[in-house]
Length: 213
Image 1: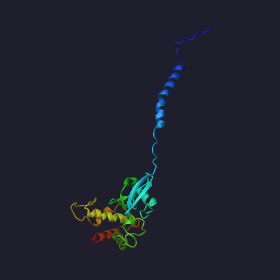
Image 2: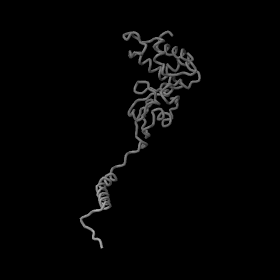
Image 3: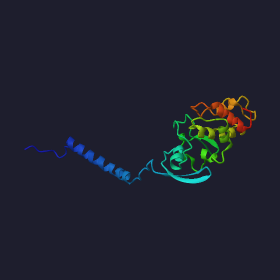
Image 4: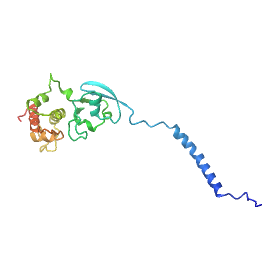
């Protein structure tokens, strides 16, 4: 009968021992991983406070909600239109903290505490904003889909002109006011009118600015 040397260790014994040791070392890490807090889901609602057209609102929103969808779907202010949803047409333009922006390109959670003005906040059918009256007077719209964004942008543009903010076509940075048909066309170039009422829109803006078109 062959005797086995107790000092000899087989390859199988080495593998079994190595596996056992690895499992023992991994155990504390596994326990720690189990005890770690769960990662917050991106869809967990976030409370966002906005002042829209002079009224305060607190909304519980998915972090991925655009400002446009917050206005339309949550506050039911459907005057702000969803056109291209890619920031290319300007139909969703609103005025946020005094500046015009494409609301489809920004998340609502980025504007905590912001003051937002939409077309509904500029005027009402019984009390139109001067720019709204000028659009009617100069036939600055046809189908009307882009009009809310056009009006909000036009109001903000005249504020930019009064503040002396130049555009890409401003020839003299010291000139005041920075107002001409060329200036207005450049500044309004982000708002597309598929009906082609551009010249009438410029006329309406010149009218409100107090200059002859």
